[in-house]
Length: 187
Image 1 (tube, rainbow, N blue to C red):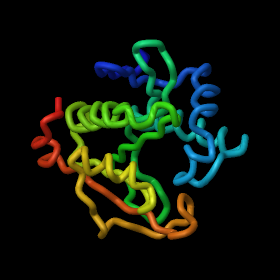
Image 2 (image 1 turned 180 degrees about the vertical axis):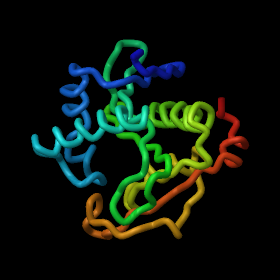
Image 3 (image 1 turned 135 degrees about the horizontal axis):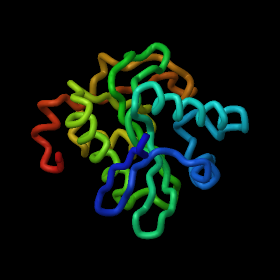
Image 4 (image 1 turned 45 degrees about the horizontal axis):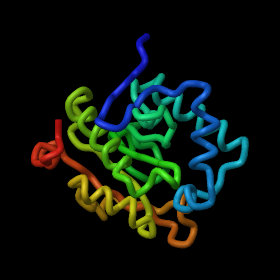
């Protein structure tokens, strides 16, 4: 089977390789990087995440892919699509997500990768809509969701202390097909 690959002007989104895990975890499994994602992962949780991401690719044909910078091949993080499966939340919907290392944030990489992932969801996977989840305190994440044209959907919010034990709440944004068709960045 051919390796999955999406290219943008500065990035490559692709399947995971064994050699990706160390730089990915070194760059993203930090107190700042995991602040809104349940905290720094121990070895068991890292292995669980690896199996989960590879399982999404195997079971659905898409996952949160590696984000590689084209210029130098650096692993910047992950971005892509999975099927929503957080206990208590919407189930089975396409979900876009991202996590980049600290020195790659604030440079438009997350937006570029998310736009490519959303274009893929609507063109190749015929998604009727795509969900994104975060917590209220993670303003950079929900800010990006809004810049992508996603709409806040408080009716889809749900209780979960997995990511922000202070509030115990996950908030939802959705981009519909009609909303995507209005975006100037769409493919």
